[in-house]
Length: 381
Figure 1 (cartoon, rainbow, N blue to C red):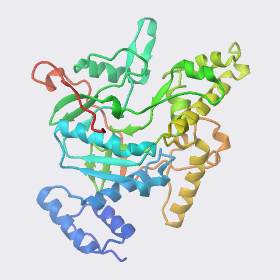
Figure 2 (cartoon, rainbow, N blue to C red):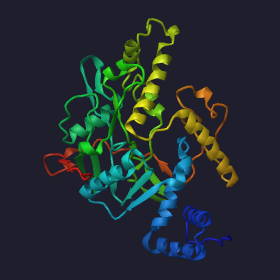
Figure 3 (cartoon, one colour):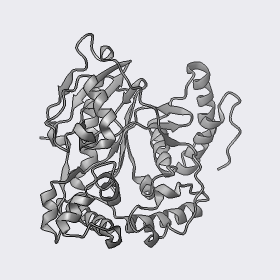
Figure 4 (cartoon, rainbow, N blue to C red):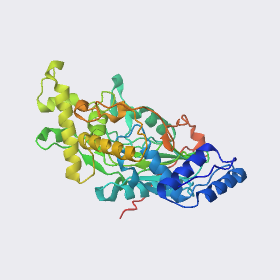
């Protein structure tokens, strides 16, 4: 397809994406679309993307994500166009719909929900576990969420029962106001962690939520910014077993697991950490499989990433990447990515981190009493 030069009023970013969209999807009418886009920008100050354009933009954003080793699935991403939704209660209802659609009976589907201007979800993920500081520096829960828990409590959350896996409320910001919403139990699918040959692993009481939904990143397409665009795929087992549960700054379960396994922890030379880490990864994969929940392993996903690179090369596209994120934290030298190198270059469309506007004074939540906790009824009956 031969593209004409964009009208002078059309910014490069918008023109570049529209050309990309028409070229990759085979959609006709590029010249007309470029002219209409220039008119939109001149009259409204912004480009209004069609749903098909936004859908392809979100897919390409996933394709361009330098830190994602699973992006070979990018063509399968489903978009829920919710740019007309800004009311906090409606936003939360749509987040529940996102969780249900993505769940798909355990056969997790990649999906992104794009909301209207002025909307933010302040939690980094829809499902996060609380952290409660204890005397002596101990923490019950996920230490990564200490500040998030503190801020949500300042906004009116009274706290949960105090278990290591209390689910935090979801903070929705719209029009400068913040409301907290309690996720119904039916919306938070969790997998109990057991081991196929070590019964003592079940005694540790470990679990993790089945569906990761990143909710605080900004989607940028054609120069247009979407601050509320929660997206989800499925877990790689190392994310849970080698980081969330194993990191010393997270749940730090390796010492307890090693003790349960009867390992000698008196010396690092026994490699007790390595042996415990391997079995924790075995346990997570076994548990998700037993529960019928989709999950990837680090060997399969890295080989698929190589095939993704090959497909991109045949399409004439460069694959950028952040090596430290693409190479898994378990047995990295056994994967095909270990000996490869990547250029860490961010191109658009893409997802970008954005600062969370903490602290938020309780007075911005409701006139006097702080954010109301809304407990949604289960929509999945």
